[in-house]
Length: 74
Image (spheres, rainbow, N blue to C red):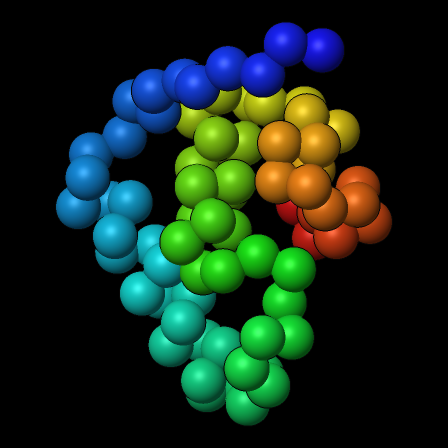
């Protein structure tokens, strides 16, 4: 494996709006702090990569150092 950095072709405003929505939903449903595998920002980037680039779930999980099961909602 060779790690690399890529550029996501998404407007910066979108990248900041999606985690704000995730954070609001987590507050609304009462999710305990630090109970998720990813921060709202990292989860948003994961989702945007999945939507825009059709990145494989295994690759998303590996890149974020989480189990594939943690990505099961996708």
